[in-house]
Image (tube, rainbow over all chains, first blue to last red; front, side, top):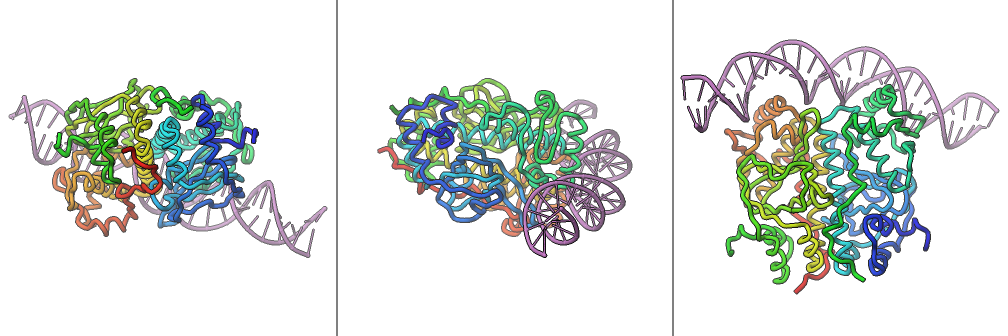
Length: 248
Length: 248
DNA sequence: CGGCGGTTTGAAGACTATCAATCCAGGTGG
DNA sequence: CCACCTGGATTGATAGTCTTCAAACCGCCG
């Protein structure tokens, strides 16, 4: 159990502050029941009853909703250390479909366990609240991107965002990463047709700022691309100065 | 202080569960410093340093970000009992501009006070987490609306959403309400031009499902309009079965 | 009675969607 | 080892929706 990857939440939260022993113990209570999902599998479907929360141990997923007309909107992506609380904690059912993008390993636990965490480790509860807020803002950014910018900006922003999260989590230092998404998926994430996603990717390549080789993406000049689309990284920092004291 | 409107957060959270005395006391600690903002005023601007959280006592506000090209995206609306934590708690500055739509009265308190609330009243911390999740899902709905539906659906969905929230908060039973937003504002909320918003509103009127008279909106047939645009109300319910016990 | 912010309306153009082929790479079965 | 299949990527032509730019219109206020 010293395997770093066995305690994704501990590792994640440990990036923000120094966890006490009892906090670490409490977090490990959530990391007991594991299950593996092959790439492409649906972990939960929209509307399905659940009282479980999932925690990503490894792999990539996305949450989506589908529309009556057959369309789909990908709402967000999940990476190592992410909790899927958002779409399941406030109702008796899931508000979104959770799909494994790559092969995933997930821990799952009943929401009551989260309630107990809030009670026994208030500082962690508050921290989770803060982390959720930063994710909320990240979604607000995407809303802005989809609502007020053109296709190229949307795609570029999405690529930068994904790269930024992978960098934090996998420690990918460069700007080359594998993108196991179809162009349809990309379109469903940023509100474009797969056909137009294709053209847009081409246009991006023509700027010289992005290169593609199959599923591998390379952002030639992250800074310049970031400036071009006014990208803001929301994941690198979470304020902790307001948290109460941690339990010993 | 028996004025119902003096304790908006207590009233809001009290809708979800029976608060204990100590919980009520704790919430009132947040409702001490009040300030009034005339309609149209900016409470905080994007990027401005803050360590304060605001709580709406009365009135309507919206949070927005502006783009380099002069555009603006309205991210969400705030009503009585709403906290503005999302855009300010995770950073030392505000991630959005907060603007009073109508005249507003806001309580404000340092985020540390929220930290203390998590510590002293874990059940409330957990509940706030749940409420934030429901708001997150509401934003996800808007993302879906903006990303995958046409103008008329977007506007109709926004009107239904606003009406639904006013109904819960002001107890507006009917489907007639005042909308103190310009068409530009509506457009900035759903990703359309003011010109197109105007045409879209006309089209909505032509369906007979919506009527307008100046700033007053009347949804003739809420159910039918809701079905037409596949609207889901996210605000009426929040699960509380997972919360820990409340402090006595 | 001008001034002003906001609403309406029109015409032209841009960006995207649609629809439909064609192309391609990886996986399958013979 | 190769023909065949299949999902995804590409590309082209055409149609829409929405934007842009402008001007006219309106209600309200000093």
